Image (cartoon, rainbow, N blue to C red; front, top):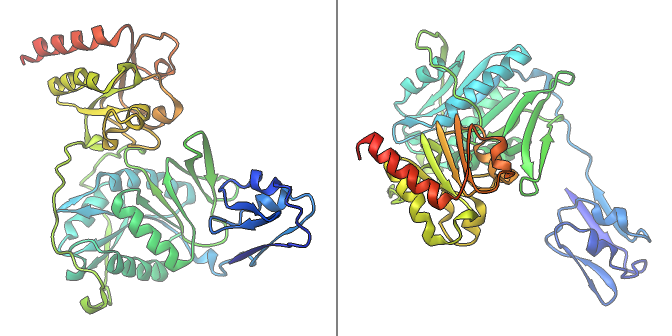
Amino acid sequence: MADIKVLTDECTGCGSCVDACPFGAITIEDDVAVIGDKCTYCGACVEVCPVEAIVLTKDEKRVQEDIADYKDVWVFIEHEHGKIATVSFELLGVGRKLADDLGCQLCGMLMGHGVEDFAKEAIAYGAEKVYYIDDPILEKYRTEPFARGAVNLIRKYKPEIVIYGATTQGRDFAGNVATTLYTGLTADCTGLDIDPETKLLRQTRPAFGGNIMATILCPRTRPQMSTVRPKVMPMPERDDSRQGEIIKETLEMSEDEVRTKVVEFIKSEQKVNLTEADIIVSGGRGLGKPENFKIIRELADVLGAAVGASRATVDAGWIPYEHQVGQTGKTVRPKIYIACGISGAIQHLAGMKTSDVIVAINKDPDAPIFKVATYGIVGDLFQVVPALTEEFKKRLGK
């Protein structure tokens, strides 16, 4: 815990702390600084105070004594409605490299009821062991029983690294587990690797709206934990001839201990699934107005593609947020990504630059999007896109 206070007799009300606070947590009242609830104890105000009127105290950093006992890389095998989330396979791919660099085993962590075949799938994608808890309570995802099972497994087997998909389920689950274990968790990572000198997990994620990339370490506690965005990591090859060990454990929890019940699943009517799309046609500010997304949708319909969009068009209210591609939207890895009227801001590129083929259409030959494009078309999108649509109709017989 931490505590921060203003020495009112010393404070001159100069306002230096107000300007320095990145969270807007400080105000000046009656010529004295007042620190509000938004304070995160970052210490920025302490450093700039010219009269040393702000005092920050923090507890000593916790150091885990048995840190050397932890080994192996674990991947949470997420599933829902009878299917493993694709991101779990992607994480087994990057997990394989992490485990090789550390000289340890790659393991899966699976919970559910009657889903032992999922353990075999995890092995086919690279896991050497799968720790599996089978219980009727785990048939549908609920935070409490899943977190209880994971915490018990981690405490018993002591993995050095645990990674989860940055999905709705993964974010909810990982946060609960990290809090219970008093360890760190880095959210929405776009890169994971092992530091060759310290052997710590380097967890890279965008910060400040994607303008910088932060590398985060967890040196004092274990396991080191991260959530990773879907489609950031490449999919490994499946090999059904792989052999592995499935280790079953019990949940040790009764239904009466769970405070929530799943009453019903209501399927969303949202038809946008950018992360699973093989082809995406995206529109940007070059469209000029929301009505012009019509030509993007027409091309997408002919190709059987999903419709994407830049942040600028979403912020302008031209198209709903679920279409947004980029650092603050969806990270995608389609076979073909067609960018129409998108200049290529760094935040957008971070969300789609790993696409297999990128086709950029823009009238500005110096647009940054052309630096990552496989094919670039310099021209008026209002002429190029309809022409492409008509040509694809002919070629595809539509």
